[in-house]
Image (tube, rainbow, N blue to C red; front, side, top):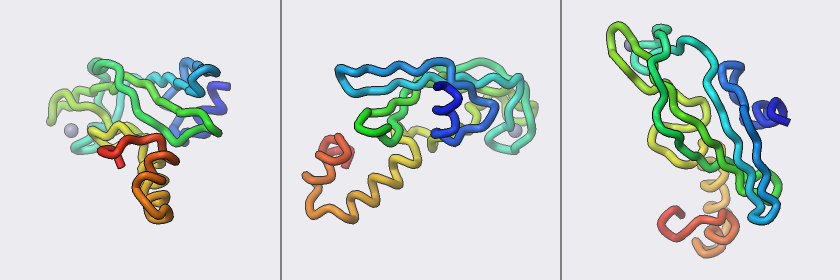
Length: 132
Ligand SMILES: [Zn+2]
């Protein structure tokens, strides 16, 4: 199942799905990812730099898998570039600071274009007024 999820997420070999937890009561799936390379491209200059450490675990919401709310858990890794110092590497599934996965954002915008009201969008996307 983990490799099935890495294909679904469209992430590269450098990320490994370490765990998938299905919560049948709350209709939720939690996917845990780990970066497994010893170096990564610096987000500023693209030069490969050795890994430094990881930040605290963060959670991103992905597009739902069937009716399940899908959450991605990962500790963003930091590399140490000779020129730019310690930097969080680019995460293939999210823009910096976003709690929503890029695919979810694109999907949410499509939904907003199609629905008659924000209330409909909130119900379909399971988001609150502020998020919509
Ligand atoms: Zn750099």
